[in-house]
Structure formats: C-alpha cells, structure tokens
Image 1: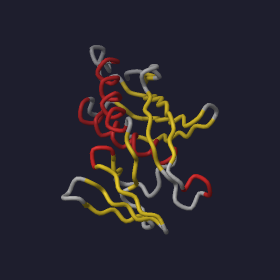
Image 2 (image 1 turned 90 degrees about the vertical axis):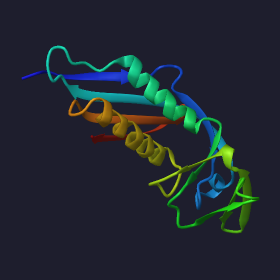
Image 3 (image 1 turned 60 degrees about the vertical axis):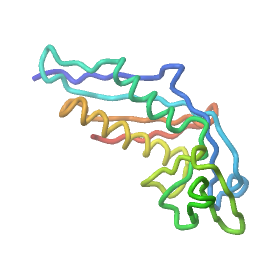
Image 4 (image 1 turned 180 degrees about the horizontal axis):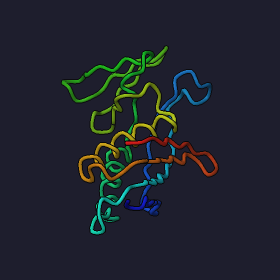
Length: 164
C-alpha cells in the first residue's frame, strides 16, 4: 500500500483583489473590495513510487484561476436577489439588486456560477470546485482531499474541505 502524502500551497503570489457586495449583510451590501489570500492543501495517494504531484503545475493552475478573479467585480450567478442582464450593445452588465442599479463593463466582471453570495466561504467553495476539477483531470485517482482557505482580512478566513 502506498502512503498518503500532503502538499501545501501558500505562495506569496496566491492572492487576488476584487470587489463585491453581500446582499442583506448590513454595511457589506454596498460595493466594496478586499485583498484575498488563498491557501491550498491537498492530500493524495501515491499510485506507485514514480508518481508525484508537481508543485509547479499546481501552482500554475492556482495562478490561472486567481488571475481570472483578480481586479474583477465578483457577482454570484445563482443569487435570487440579483438580476443580471446584458446592456449597451452587449458591452456591459446591468445589475439590479434591491433599490440599486449598477452598470459595469463586462471585462471588469466575473460572474461565479454555483454560489448565491460572494462570501469568503462561498469563494472557497467556488475555488475548490475549479481546482478540484483541474486536479481530477491532471492527476486522476490521486488526490483524496482538497482544502481551500480564503483569507479575506488578516484574522478572517474561511476554509472549504472536501474529497474530490
């Protein structure tokens, strides 16, 4: 039986800056931003003595997803309180929420599927799904547990941990 191994990815480059609002969360329901840090830990089983997970390829996959979120306005696609429509000849997103209306250039927005709010917990879940899918494709049947931690502010963090 091959041993279970663990890798942790907490490179200083694992961060992104983004804006969002949290519907129904008092002062957080206005547009505001954070500088997020991302920590990733995975447990895996060595299939044979020659099999391993390459730090460089996983770090590159993490960076790819972080760059998709960096300097964007994050919107939850599945929020029942949020209406998102295309406008200005398909160049902007028109956002209706409560008594507010926003219009953002599409290039400045990342719409995140599978979540109803852009809380740190949901961002950890979203990132877990994205990276988990990549790991399954690139390292099939090796990774057993994936943990994703999103640090929103110093001292405030959320972790999503699940098998993949």
